[in-house]
Length: 184
Image 1: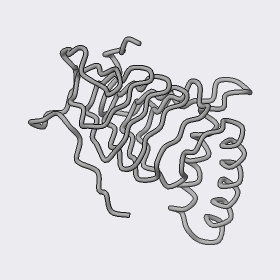
Image 2 (image 1 turned 60 degrees about the horizontal axis):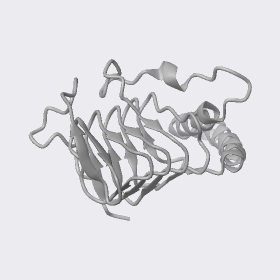
Image 3 (image 1 turned 90 degrees about the horizontal axis):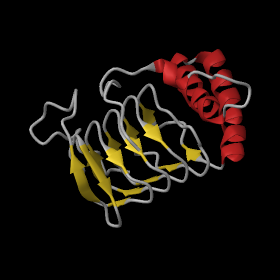
């Protein structure tokens, strides 16, 4: 899995979430989350009714994809779910802009994923932990600690296997997004 360095780690590319055909479960699942959150933010009777409708539609797409992505999650724009089967994302996890998540991925506990992070099939991220910008996490990797920006990690437990110059990486000293809150 090679990462496209032309994708921004800070500016969301909303075209990545566009529904392109009738059977497109990844974008349709994301649409339910976005519309639910917009309806809740709107408030009032119409917002309440719309949020109930989108919660029901979200449940349908969750069953179809066998995924558990909570309606209240913080998800940056441009998330790409090409095969959304079996994805489990903890409600305290946060996902940055323009990320890519393959099938059977689990984000357990408060995992803060930076921008433009590609997470391979079957990867498990056991938080609380932070993942920097422009990171590639290999298939079936088990990540148990913080991952700096601009690296590729793989293995059980995950280790850095390559480092590269990352365009648009975090300007912070350690290259990591803010540490997630572990409060319940």
